[in-house]
Image (cartoon, rainbow, N blue to C red):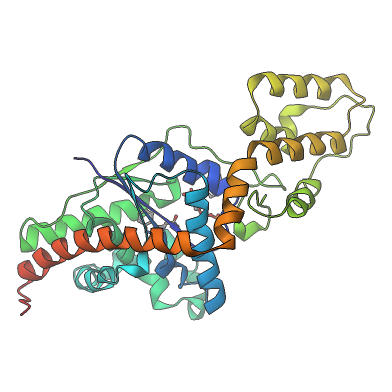
Length: 323
Ligand code: ADP
Ligand code: TRP
């Protein structure tokens, strides 16, 4: 049977972009194919150096998966660090990974103009990602375009291992949605934690309101007709509303007498209404971590089983026989 696997780095509370672009599509796929979904907290350590934040981000990321309805009776949700075998596999893979392959990886290259800021974890980031994938016999890995190079590296390393040490790993394929959704942020660039332009739909209503009020628009006055296709408020609204409501808003833009403040209010109301249930579930989960902890424990037990059986074969094929 095919196995889907994907990870989300726990570098902050998931925002509207993460949810529409990664979490919801993965949940949809998980309704058809058994999925391994994990919180990449070891990867997050390449940048996070604060113990409380590391814990908080992992819990919030897990709560987001659960709040949006991931069915954990059919899928496996776990924390990367709860299966530390992945770091053992990473070492084996490190030993066959050519230096130039990593030196060419975007994740490193983009930061390599300031080498004193690059830690070894950042350099070997793609090897840990390869281990994440092949430790669980994953066939299909849904990722954003920015991760395609990491998938190529994974395939190269897995093939190299298989050729040298005998057939051990499934060779995974990346799956990239054709019309990959790019959710714009409040400043019109791609919504991203690193640009501080997010809408935190799992935050308080006040936070959401403030972020929406901060959406950048042109300076057209209330009475003037406005161009919806050039407006960040409209672009976000369109991703969330029905065709009927989108058309209604479009006409209001075109007719004039409708200001950006009004549009922001409509977007705010839409978000609060549309995400009412997951927001409520998220808050409930965050108020008592027990359910999250027990779901992660259950997931890590299943993940551990697969990891142990694959790792046993790896050790044998490497000539490392364990008592
Ligand atoms: P961020 O840019 O906020 O740090 P990440 O790089 O951690 O987000 O992305 C986590 C997941 O969310 C990835 O699968 C990524 O493709 C998806 N994602 C992030 N931002 C967006 C966005 N603006 N639109 C669509 N998908 C996004
Ligand atoms: N690097 C991925 C990202 O930043 C997260 C990730 C870590 C991942 N390990 C993975 C994604 C394995 C897919 C498969 O989005």
